[in-house]
Every structure is written in structure tokens, then in C-alpha cells.
Image 1 (spheres, rainbow, N blue to C red):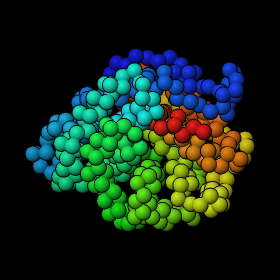
Image 2 (cartoon, one colour):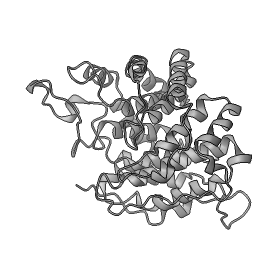
Image 3 (cartoon, rainbow, N blue to C red):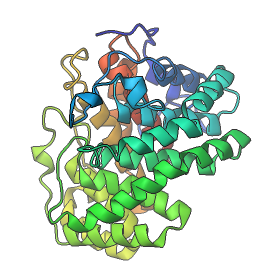
Length: 362
């Protein structure tokens, strides 16, 4: 299962830039340049309208639901699965916001306009009302829809205004689903894959803050405190599990950083992950043994998600946690050279994680 994409050798070398010197220090900020944005944009652009191979993840109520991916999901049928398609769309909008002069900007805009039409989004909304599929993509895909809508709202461009209006019914449905589901979830979901509840809360909270949705913001804050406020000594040494692309410990840290006041968070994190405070804190990047294996390549995503959490912490608390930039840089440098290759198992989604991590760098 391969899709040919030009190899980018040693891609990460181009990302390391310093304001004051040509040589690179381990804690220098990493920047996403226009050149590398062009290269990374090729990943979702090459698959966002490619229907097969495809993993539908649907529950069949009866034989009438046996339809092709494009018929079921006319907006998000490409890039192997629904959620990867969604965050691939987010990535392209995000790159256009940051780099309006991307080489393939017009092609990207045309494909976004075609996929995110009002008609297509209406069909995506209808899918969630099909019998047996109301919980489709809970909560990982829900969170990425809200992230995409947030990005469109922040994009100062007529196309962004149009597409945001088109996507709004689906984003609104995701908000309703969060408001309905979170009070029912008695216990948190602490895993390293899609259903990790802290990750979904984190992206949804960003959306709620941007849109001033007080009901969603308050519910997320209440549930995060209910589940996580009393946690101590998170077993980071137990991570990673073999298929992780999210760190259970770090994702919990990320949402608590967002919902707690600074003083409260500083007290909480000292109990939750006290080792982060040490200047000699280290964490070995996760290793991928076979990037043609769709599960094993998850670990490249783990390196990026660890990095964005550490960047967020270092940005908000530079005096206390600035030393963690070096650890985050090491994680990105480990995986970035390998994500643009001919292994569709990783290329259909890893670009989004890389871009999100790089955008969180101080």
C-alpha cells in the first residue's frame, strides 16, 4: 500500500535557524520556512482527493450502508481515513494562513473549495445521523473538525469566510456532541491513540476559547479538573506503548496547562510530573522499526505530539521549563527526516502532526 511522493532527504536540517548565529545550539527555536512548507504541503495535497486505499471505520446497520468512501464522505474521503483527511485540510489552511505564497496555493485553494462545499458538508452532517454511527470518530475526529473550523475563522481571506460558513453546521454538531457526551463519561480515557480524551479536550478547548463558547469552555474545564486534578506521579517511564502517537502523560499535562490558572498549574505539575522541572530532564525519542507498518509508524507522530506539548509548556513558563525546548527539538529532529517518503502509511497523516508541532515552537 504505497503512494509515491518525492523523497526529501534530511528535511529537518532546513528547519534549524537562529536569529543571531549560523551555527545551531540545541535550544535555538525551530522555524517553519516557506521552502519547507511547500514540501510538507505536498503530503495532504497529494491525497485529499484520492479515494483508495481507504479505512472507513463505520458500523453497518444494514446492507444499504455499503457505499464507497466518496459517497459516504464527499468532503473527507481522501488520505486513507476520515480523521486524517480532516486534519490534512486543517494543515493546508494553516499553511496558507502562514504562507499565502505557497507554490501550489491556487491548487490548494481550488481543492479546499471543492471539498468543503456546503452540499458536501451537509452530507457529512447527515452521516452522523445514520443508525449506529452517532459516535463516529468520537472524540478525535470531532476535535479536528473544531480545529479546522477555528483555523478557517482565523484566516483573513474571503475563501476562509466562505468555507467557515460551509463547515459551521458540522462544527456545531461536534459542539453538541461534546456537550452531550462529556457529562456521561465517568472515567477518563488514558491511551496513546485516537480516543485519548485529554487530546480531544485540548483541541476543543482552543476552539471554545477562540469562539467564546462559554458553555463548552466551562464543561471542558470542569471535566478536566474532575478527571485529572488529583493525579500525581504520572508514570512517564511506562511510555510509549508500541502503537502510541499521543503521550497519555503529556496530553493530560497539555489540557491542564490550558484550563488551570498559572499559579495553580505550577503547583499541579510539580506533583504530576516533577522530573520536568530538572534542568537535566531527558526523554529518548520513540523509534520506528518499520515505517511501512501503519501502526508502528504511529511513533513518529508521538515524537511530534510530545514536542508540541513541551513547546507549549516552555513558551508559557520559559524561566522554569525553557530547558525542555532542547528535548522537543530532539524529538522533531528524530522523525522529521523520515516522514516524507514512499510509505503511504505515514505520509497520509504525519505532515499535520509535524506542522502543528513546529507551529508551537517558541
